[in-house]
Length: 518
Image (cartoon, rainbow, N blue to C red; front, side, top):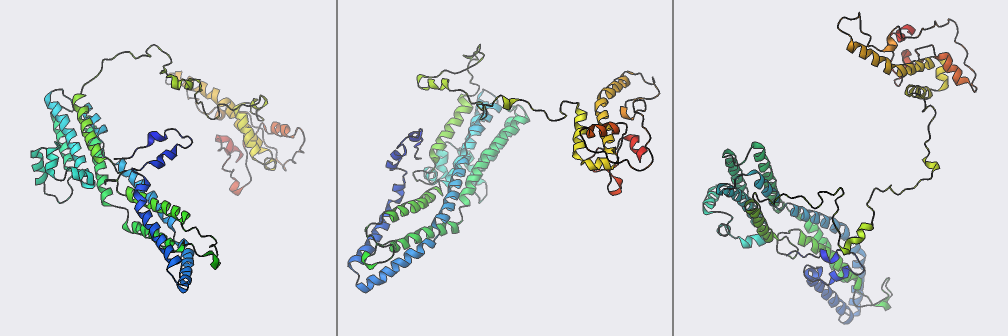
């Protein structure tokens, strides 16, 4: 049975885990005490032979062997190999438990989709869940020694009530050399289809939901079969086992205490018993024992899965859910907080202190700022219209020399953009309303186009003076204002570049005005 100690460590306190060290069942002492006694006995035998039985020449040779073994034992990567192996085994162990076929989801779908309070409906529901339980028993009987000891033959399965004698004949007459744990799932599907034809299942959507839950249940059974079939590669297990035992075989010789009068390096003390070597053996060999116990959790170790308990629990719960609890509802009543705007369950005296604790609002909820840090700071031009902000932003993107070299044409282009952004909303909205309300054929043409392209709304364009380009204005306090004012009447810009094209980040040309300047 699984050793559970969760309640003992519910609260972390001083010395709380020391109580766990005194447990025997499921402990590392129970797994390792034989190996530890063998290691200690072999070590003490070599130590006694060195001290009392060997001659001087033999002692000298033994001391050289001890130094050699101690020097080269550290080349075995025990912690590296063992760490990855145990991580792999623990991950595999937990995934196998997640693949245990539990019928809880399936029984809820069965009780909600298979209708009928009569004996026929009850028979459908109970038989469906019995087939699911039978499939789980067959797969667990194939992978778990404890379940196989409980159901060694199919006769025991029939006697337990998971299968009828007629079903056993069909099961054995099915000619297949492979594991047939999936046969009850096929029976489940056929029976569900028959219930649908009889109207016990109200529609195809309910049948689809039922079969989807069955497939999830069957998938877990299949994964248990594959975990039993595909083990951790044998070479990996062999490498880890050889690495651990060869390392401690070298430690039996290499960790011997030598005579301090010989003057060997790091052999200035004689304690007879290698305390830290024993601790190292306890940790590494215990780590390996953990992997050996978890690599197949379907055996009969202390911490292996309680497969027989799960079979009993699942069968009983599924039958209760689909039979006695079918259409079993309590009377609908108003709950205790029906008229309460803020429902809150009461606390006992032991937990009343939780009422004084504020609820969590977020990690930045308690941050305090000074008043001057909370003042809103606006950038230059943010207070103006949105179009002007965009125009000023584009104007700031270009260096001052580029706009001046083009004769201020960039400023004229940006001015055009500002005028468009400021008036396009009102003009286009008015034109759209006029077009929508005008009857068919009321006017010669519709004026829903861009108001900047309408000749009536377009500003007059003065002719460009012929002659050399005007000199660049001298920078000064009012230079920006003068350039913008001078550029206001113009509507387009040409930027020097390859083939006279504007850079890609400038707006696209606007209608006929671009053609006029071209």
